[in-house]
Amino acid sequence: MKDRKLINWLGLTGLIALISYAAAVIFSPLAFPGYNWMAQAVSDLSAETAPSRALWNQLAALYGQCSVVCVTCVSVFVSAKRISSKLFRAGIHLFTAMNWVSSVGYSMFPLADSGKEIASFQEIMHMVVTVLVVLLSVASLVLMIIAGFRANGSRAIGIWAAIALAMMLVGAIGQGAVPPEYFGIVERFSVFAAVGFTAVLGCYLFGGFRKLPIQL
Image (cartoon, rainbow, N blue to C red):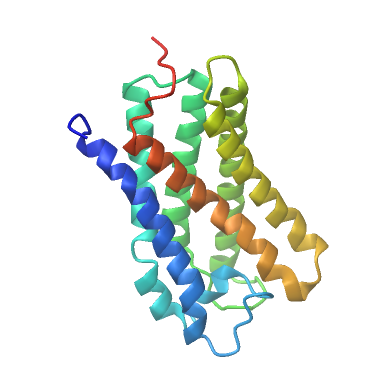
């Protein structure tokens, strides 16, 4: 405890982000009459015309900021301490970039209308941001999985990254495979994958990544 620095304590922001996001996903539908969580996307809750937008913004107020703070601190820490391999650190940096793109991109281009067909420039840009977030997420997790299962890598983080990637794939594949009335269920696997993995990295940062090798 005595050798834990401020940057380590900031790892707890990852857990705060997860709690904030989960609260928004669970309780925002209460302010959205007729919302069907099994069929509708999470982003419908925060759409500009959604009746639940105000409640979503309150409950998710700490989600975006805490996620960015957490992964940025993780990036700084693993770089400064030269934690694990270059491949692992590259994965961390891509995951950090994904969080920045998500935070800034979705703030600039929120979904204009819940449940509406994607047509306007703002809605198209919202989807572009989504594509970038998915690509950066997959690339970063794949790098951390490979790094984790190499010799002298962090197998535990590799396993966590594999779980997160599996959740994203379940969401991506499931959305096209399941009936429309179950779209929201599989979509939630994807949306919780990134924020959940952010919380995991935050816990490692809080512990100082002590069990990971240092590359000189």
